[in-house]
Amino acid sequence: MKRRLARVQFGFTWLCLLIAVAPAHFCCTAFAEKVDFTFWDKDLKRYVNPQGLVDYSAWKKKTNNLDRFLSQIATADPSANETEEKCLLINGYNAAVLKLTLDHYPLETIQDIKGTFTEKRFQFRHTRVSLDDLENRLRGKGDPRIHAALVSAAVSSCLLRREAYVPTSLDAQLDDQVHIWLSNERWNHFQPEQGRAEVSAIFKWYEGDFERNGRTVRDFLRENAPRKYVDFLSHSDYEIAYMPFDWSLNDQSASTRFYLLSRLWSRVKNWIPFGMKTQPRP
Image (cartoon, rainbow, N blue to C red):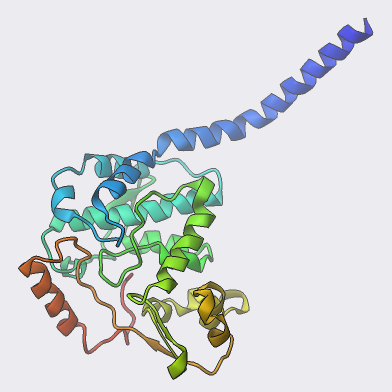
């Protein structure tokens, strides 16, 4: 009798636990089913090379996966947690940038599109939003690493990752993106012998995002730059300069005459500002 009663109590306890856990499990499952990152992931692997350059001409011919992914984001339910929310916004932002570029391709720079970052062209959870709207939601989360993940179809943009950002690996992916960003002289150039660090204009445009909670851009550089520069970046007397931002399209067709001429024109056109004024999302 005592054994039977114990079994009943044990079963009742497990039933209560299942009832308590079920809503949370259902919420995560529903999110995973509602937004399937595999569509976006397949396209990134297919059309983006290891240098982060995009095969726009091939992708433009087949955008069904991209369209399907964006349609899921358009009707997505609220995320179960902050990590899922960040993944949704980062992937959604980058996918929207690629969609906008493909819709207008061929072009020399995304800046040639009217209202690139400000026009409300996209749907996010049944709401019309702009690229700036999506970016500002991400910036509000206080994680400066997102600036190594968001791209704007430009040569000086951070690397377009060849995989989707997923909740189970997001922190590792963002850390890796920062490492790639600060390790490549295409975006950031450290010169200990000259006492100078030439860094992406992103650090100037979004300086406030790197200076929250008593932090500074110098702190971010010291903690995330390649280890060989740690001693150099530990001193506060080095000069910081901002590299000119090249808005030329990050197109794999780099050998074509159109690409070369458009890149030259973009450099000439952006030579005077040199990132000196606030600009849209780089």
